[in-house]
Image 1 (cartoon, helix red, strand yellow):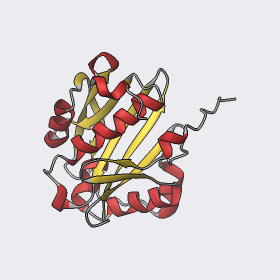
Image 2 (cartoon, rainbow, N blue to C red):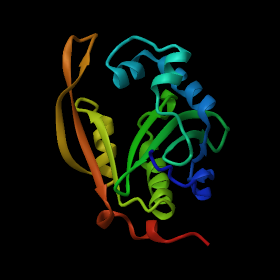
Image 3 (cartoon, rainbow, N blue to C red):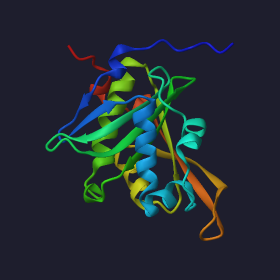
Image 4 (cartoon, rainbow, N blue to C red):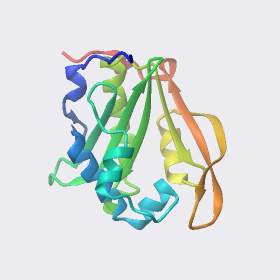
Length: 195
């Protein structure tokens, strides 16, 4: 039987950044956000390499939904007007590692350094309260904006997954780059607990 990770209350709190509120959401809201992602054909293709949309039932069955112990989804809310602009996913796994994913749904925020701002805050929270010592992420090799965001955060290229997916529209294989950030490269303030 798989041991369940204990729930850490601080990981279920809203995280505040300069421009955003990062609100942890449950299963229903996360599926609504995943469904909203599918409404934009460009985002859908970038993430799934297909133009096929999943129905509600398939999203519930196939997505890794938040359980607030090892899987988290944060809704990204514009602090000024209260609108949802996207979501960020975190999955904890052994050994003291976390996998990250972000989707900016509101095109007005593209190119505005949103991933850098929210990831810094989320990674600080998980380093402090979940003891994460390694963050990682994977990105399609042609997603240049995401690659630059990883580099801005100090992530290092840790490998290439050749032909790890297939783009059904372009009819060609897709390579992925893996990035990681280790504890020794974390900013010092991430280790400080808030009073």
